[in-house]
Amino acid sequence: MPDRCVVFGCSSVASLEKGISLHRIPFFNDERSEAKRRRKRWVNFVKATRDKWVPTKNSKVCSEHFTKDSFSRQFGSLSGSESNFAPRLIRDEFGIVAYPSIYPRKDDNELTTRDRRMILYHTIRCMQL
Ligand SMILES: [Zn+2]
Image 1 (cartoon, rainbow, N blue to C red):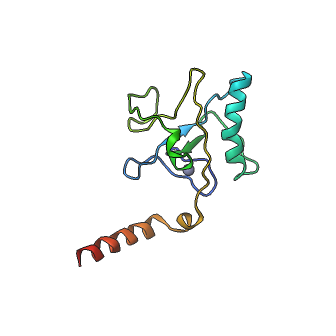
Image 2: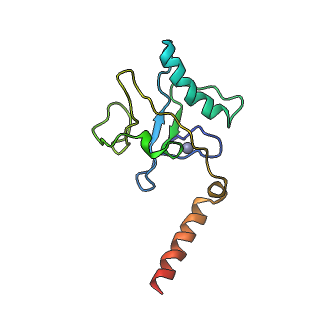
Image 3: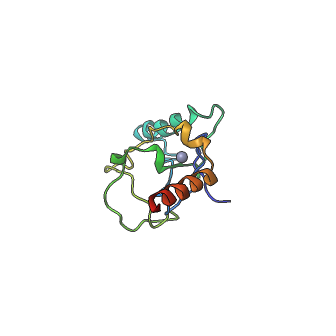
């Protein structure tokens, strides 16, 4: 099963085509107070959508929930299992500083992928006419 975004109502998978990347919740099992504080922002963000959710080391949040300035411009090589195209979240000497803040938009979620494809298809058709 592919990794999915853990935010309720989202469940995006990483997609180069849609420009969506997945980001593991940082500082898992890191008990330093600053690590806990930063991790908590991510966990609380997801918990606001899913009451009984418990984070695991594989929990990921997709790029749709971050503001643009959460990402560094550098598209370097990434370590581990992260995809090559994944933009990097900004970090300082301690680690990742960025945290998710944007909830899924309702209108968008009511559209299925098929709906979106149809809209795109019709838009292109209209442009050609
Ligand atoms: Zn998401």
